[in-house]
Length: 294
Image (cartoon, rainbow, N blue to C red; front, side):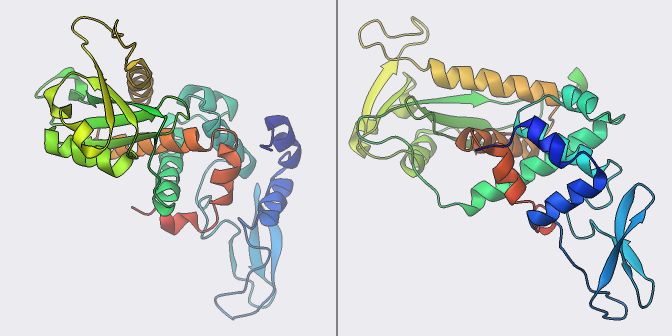
């Protein structure tokens, strides 16, 4: 069961208790060897508002957070754990900034980016699974993501995103494409949707021929109706998803396709681990510094 914020506060009410809890989770090591004199037992000592490892032989010292995602952060460790929790609960930048009493919006944004990257790495390391199947309905649609920088000048070329969502399980996929062709769409569908699925799309001709690929295909003519009056076919779920994602992008001020990729990774990650987003991201913090170095 996912930890509540009240339980989290009890575990992280001091800097030391937070460190000890992170050590229990093996996110921070329980011991450290001195890199200068190779002495095996460095001692944990208090230093200013935090703690560090200090060698009892040569007196060299290093941060307890060295080699972790928390290294070189100006935010106290218990506030950082709060930040990660609030991110997992989908709080806005502004609300997180207020809750952790951080004066820098940039710092909060940087941490959101780190957690997005970790979401991407986690998903990339999992075995890929197709959505849909016999008896399932998958809505598929495309949406274009453009952003005019500072509202002046040329609109930069940005990708179409092809998305699909299973109506019953809410499993989804999103793929960026720069060339929206029939061949590209069909290749994406074959890579992401199981045969036997009932696929609902608009009537764009790029989707013609899906029956020949092993799918049932229903369409809705958006120029006439949002819901097909004869079959009830609609793509409202995927269209609502586009609206939600674009709202998130506007709120966070994302400007490039790299950020867009991470935004979709975060969305899928939180959808897949809806009931345990915090515990999954927390369990992946160990050795995460090198994993998100891209």
